[in-house]
Structures are given as C-alpha cells and as structure tokens.
Length: 400
Ligand SMILES: *Cc1c(COP(=O)(O)O)cnc(C)c1O
Image (cartoon, rainbow, N blue to C red; front, side):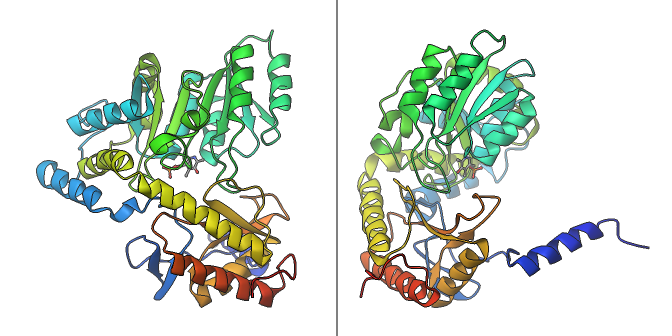
C-alpha cells in the first residue's frame, strides 16, 4: 500500500536538494548571551531575549513561588474556570504600564493577533495591511474573511489611496502595521498611518512584538516612542520576546477588551497560561521599570555591533533596531554563512524565501543587553573572517 502522505516526503527531498532543508538546532542550556546548541558553546545572536530576562532571578523566583502556591496549570480556558487572580493582575499591570484603559492576555502573540483581527471584523469589512506584516496578522486577516488590501512596505501615500478609494464603501476599515518589522529591523510608519487612519475613520492597530521592552520609555513600545497615545486603538504586544516568558496581549479600551473576552477564539477555546507564566510576566514589568540600564545596554550593544558589521563591509539593510540582518542574496548562501558561523562559534539564523523576498536572503542577528563587549568583538571577528572567506563583503574596507 502506498503512503498517502508520500507527497510530503517528496517535498522534503526537494528542500534537501535545494539546500533549504532546516534541521532544528537543539538548545542544551538556558537561552542566554552564550548558549550551548548541539554540543557547541556559541555566542547566541538568534534569540529574542533582548533584555536577558529569560534567566532573571526575580522572574524565576516569581514563577517558582506561583507554581508552589497554585500548581502548574490553570485547569481550563479563561471563560470556563481558568481565569486566576494572577491573570487579572497581569492584565491590570500591563494596562497600567501601557497607559491603556484595559488589557487582555493571550497564550501567545500569534494568538493575540490572529484572535483579535478575526474577532473584530467580518466579511463586509476592509483591512489595509503593510506587505511585510507578520504571519499572525495575515492569518487573522484571512480568518476574518474581510477584504484585504495590501500596501507596499511603509508606503503611507499608497495606504491613503486605498483608504480614499474605500471612503464611500460600507464596512469597518482596519489599518494595521508591525511596530518593528521582524526581518529587516526597521520601524513602522506609525505617525503617518495614525494620521490617515484618523482622516478616513479607520481603526488603527499596531503589532509591537519586537518593540515591547525595546522602544519607548521603559520599553512601552512604538506608540510611546512616537508619542501617539490615544491615537492607536489597538496595541498588541508579546510576552515571549523582551519580556522573556510566553504570551501576547492586546491593550485598548475597556469595551474592546470586553468584546475580545466574548469573541476572540483563542481566548474562548484554548487554556489560559499556567500560574508560573503569569507571575513571571508580572515580575518582568517591575524589572523594566526598576532596571532601566538593561534597555540602555541593549541600545549601546546594538549601535556597537551594527557599526562593526557595516565597517566590515556587510550589507545590513535598513535596520533601526537590535534586529540587524546581514543580507547576502541567495537562500543557499545565507544557510552556508549561518553554518560556517556556527562552526566558528556564532549562532545566527539563515532566512530565505518565502520568509523574505527572493534574492534578499540573509543571516539575521539580534544582540541583547547581556552580550559583553568581548563577546561582540569575538562575533564581529568571526563574521569578518567567514565573510572574507565566502566573498560576501561589500568592500575591501574590511576590519583588519
Ligand atoms: C514573534 C512575533 C509575533 C508572535 O509572538 P509570539 O508571542 O512568539 O507568538 C507576532 N508578531 C510579530 C511581529 C512577531 O515578531
């Protein structure tokens, strides 16, 4: 009998031939500035652990204490019997932090985006979306069955033309962008987009996954960074990146949050966070306010490392944040570069089509607050050595 799933094996074989087959790297230590993957100690430039909070003693202690007191699971979805006082406290804590009226926490940032967009819009409605928005936004848009209008990356004039064309068309309009784009590290065109959203009466939504804990005062995100308080109706953030734990949240009006309590499908049909997760997240917001030097270190390291890569002759694209891509062109080259770096002691992931456009494949780096100068210097030396060997440096102005 033939295997009805054999077409999957054929696809895997094609990926192996194309050099884009990805074996999972296994982390054998905590996620930190230097970690052990597959038996190798490497400088970790591939995590979203921007502030080093995955191993912060206060977060770990909070998780342990909550686990001892309340167990390892919540027992149900939020709407049945799985809303614990810790979940409510976390939502209040985040709302206060973001200067928002209310907040709902989801199991992940992915669930927050997909669950929110699909809940608040229907087939009669319209979504105006940046072409590089995250997959969870795209899935939420598709699930909503609303009409999707994609505008070229950060092109406010193009987004405005779309909204103009929809001005007399019935239905709600949602204008949606990432706050920081995860593959290029550039910041979304929030001020311009907020302005046209107001002009055309569209709801404005921002996904701040890579801006939470990174941009704005104490890491309050892009709305705070651009001082757009009160002009963005829906702010999404993640608890899985700089916050160091797991989860996603939506901040907005009390009625938006109450509506999501009633209609967001991941909220209604998937079990809430374990108490340890909620408690650790709560501790993280205290740390953001009590240890401002972490965000300062993150940005100092970002500037230092980006400058080092550029001086060596690498193409780092349009990055404005700790996400710094090293753009090499072909997917195969990106994966070869990533493999060579790993052999020399640096973990940085190769990313190709369809995650990024064809011909724009890259190795993506993310520095954190906890990388030391010697670690960054070592990583720069390794990048330069491997880049020279592979012939991907832009100029001969390479560091000696
Ligand atoms: C990582 C990411 C998400 C998903 O967040 P998780 O908490 O990991 O599910 C959503 N949006 C963007 C832009 C992201 O980069």
